[in-house]
Image (tube, rainbow, N blue to C red; front, side, top):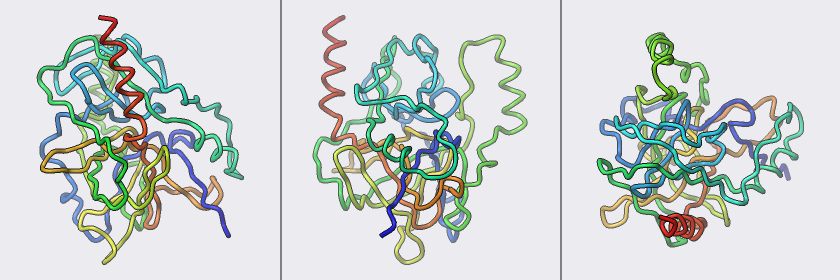
Length: 290
């Protein structure tokens, strides 16, 4: 039996997951007209989720340099990242994996906890945080996932050139860089969302498959390159609940031949329900310090 190999986009220079769509649905159908309050653009690439007026949560590998004391824009209002708290089970990528056998990389990815909390310096008063899902019955639930960045279809997989900055974006970033400490983001790019059904789960991860045709949801989608840490939400009694964070994607074969986002690929998300105790304990500890 061929072992399914799993790979993270960051380590093979694909950076972060975004949205790959059905080939038989108009791309405009996936566009989000109003950005949810809880969706926060991270510097450069990736997203975070507002879970408290002082706190963001995201995939740990999105924080790829020192974000401590860095400004961050929250829907037009500048704030500052006061603390960066990695889960104790997170391990930084040692790099130098190279092409070929994926097992060492797979063992590394499966052994780490890809989650980090970011404490903001000022309370967020203009946005509503999202509540988190606390139960462990995610399998079979329909989820909505948000992302920016590279796009493509289930036939092509992700097309990496689609996440490159536009000419205007490049000019704008160049002009403003001497006058601000704010790093460039993807905030002026289209935000997309897609649907899927959680098929399986383990202690740390939630998984779903990118199906096609009659097996797929009307707005079925998958991960591409450009938005790790993006939220997967479910709706309960009309209320959105955070259920997962975009992290990696399964892949069968040699790393050198990897193309993300094709039909049949399995997306892997951080399972929020497994980390709620750590999140709550961390937030409470910092509240007690103030």
